[in-house]
Length: 199
Image (cartoon, rainbow, N blue to C red):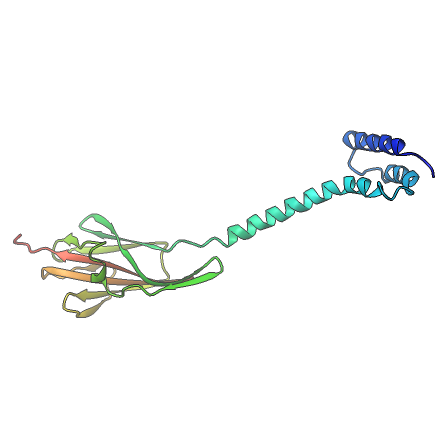
């Protein structure tokens, strides 16, 4: 049997020293020169091979972690749009009602209350003067949207103008605004209380 265990250790240390001072794996004949005398050491051969595999495993782990990060980033859900209502120079955020939204590879449908006055406690009526102009600002902007005016007695009227004008008659008016995006549809609600000019 050629060589000895101490000689194997010595050659291994020389191998590691040369790797630090030269290009990694640049001289393949050097690797063969070390491996050949110890081909009869099956017990220690896996140790030597493991030394060669460490950089390969490290690179594979780095690639795997990078790929996982990319997948995780692409699967993050986008937040629902926001609707800001401007009346008499004041801005208010509308309540989010029913919606169906697909993002990050998953879809969700929420069947919330479907009329504006159901949200009066959390979103009190917005005070406004009669015939005031109402402006709607979406973030992000939808592909299309429409507005439905709901009176306290349940009467509904479609609102076509953008921006639109409040009624001249005092009272509370609910508004249902439904927008459509590539990810789905979202309905918003807000209530406006038209003040009596005499007050």
